[in-house]
Figure 1: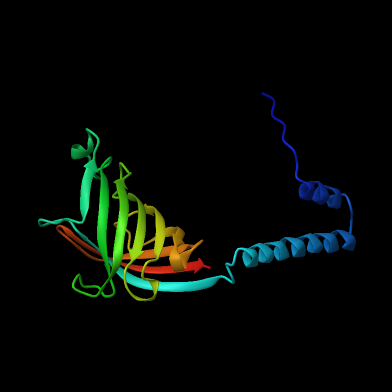
Figure 2: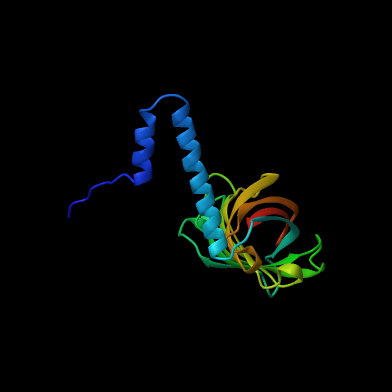
Amino acid sequence: MEYKEHASPLCNSIQDLSKMKGAPTVALLLFFLAIATSMSDYWRETVGMGQPKVSHLHFYFHEVGKGSNPTPILVAEANSTKTSPTSFGSVYVADDPLTEGPNLTSKLIGRAQGIQAACSMTEFNLIMALNFVFTDGEFNGSTLTVVGRNPILQDVREMSVVGGNGVFRLAQGYAQLRTILLATGSLTVEYNVTVIHY
């Protein structure tokens, strides 16, 4: 099978422009930028997305690892995980409560459902893929998808918001995490989330 790489017409136009000198080149580049911007507005309006919004969310994540109903469940581990100082190779499935306040007894606003895996041989670090499923308030029925590296012993961590649905369609943004309680079998993490959505 033969493969050829073809430059797009826009790339060819830009290459032609690069041979020109002075103000006409700048004017043409600005013209192409204006066309690209208006096309993105056209597509956004055509599919009914409207203008982007920015939302800031603040809530608490609770992981309960003790008792008869733990929220993370170990589903896999490597042969060497038990001797690893960082639990490297362990994989958990989680269904953790999200609350309005820092206490587990605070108003429940949703669940954090997904997968966590210990992915470092040298530090306590998780790779996390979570859906925040909101069950109360203005975001009831909507979700945010958060993915990233979580070095859990650092004071403040940051993970990416990579999508969502409902109110949060086409979401992108970031979540800042701060552990406020770390005890045997119990963990509470404060989340500050900034998200752009349509």
